[in-house]
Image 1 (cartoon, rainbow, N blue to C red):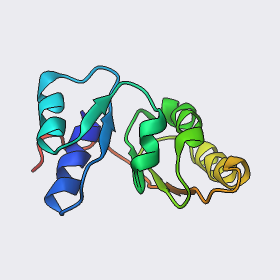
Image 2 (cartoon, one colour):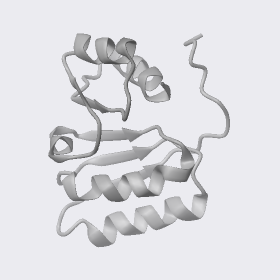
Image 3 (spheres, helix red, strand yellow):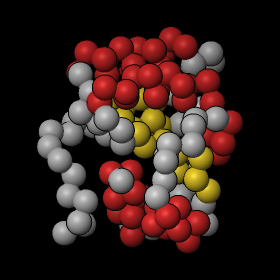
Length: 123
């Protein structure tokens, strides 16, 4: 749901959506993604290679494991934006992992500090 909130804000600013990854999307999220001309996926995969920017908006406790699952699929020059409440040390480790494991690709890891709840009402 948080990802859908961010998705709407990005679309309103003129950005395009390639895909949205949601383990169990509800009908409203699936409809919004399809209306934006994109697809919903249940897990990271090769489809991530289409993205210039990947935004992660998950629980902080799974942020690192999600990044690790995405990393093999990210294209050269991608910006991976982590908008979670994850532990700062884990985020530093993800940044180092991006530099070390990208295998010749430039993967730019950006940790965005999230300190409170997202207003899902959009106001």
